Image (cartoon, rainbow, N blue to C red):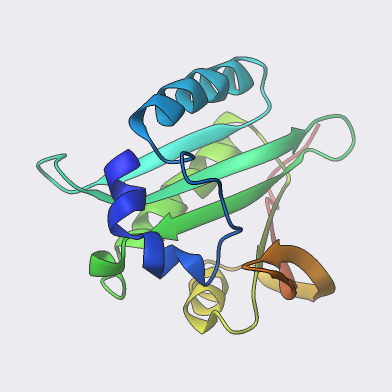
Length: 162
């Protein structure tokens, strides 16, 4: 993961919040993976990594986080794809697997995914997976020194019952 982020640092910069210089070091990732394991054990988030057939390159990552139970049964989904794998349909496969996991294994009702209006590729990916636009969040996230609007989308699990 440290290498994935180092190689794609410039590619991710347009869509990702600024991080401290040591955020993607091997040491930092070791700590973060332990934190992610605890969040998984406590039903708060799940992180997925898609790799190539030889498992030597990370294609992309996808996570479901901020899982809320009770009457909401929902989560947020975020994802990233390595620049060299863009436009090949691989991210759609990864995200599809995550959706299945969220709906079938976790029995969630709603997955929310938001994207910057300028990220047309992300919008098309979500639309192709059945996500529906629900609105526009003004000044939603602080990305690279400025507040950015985000299109809010959601996918509902129509088969989910309590």
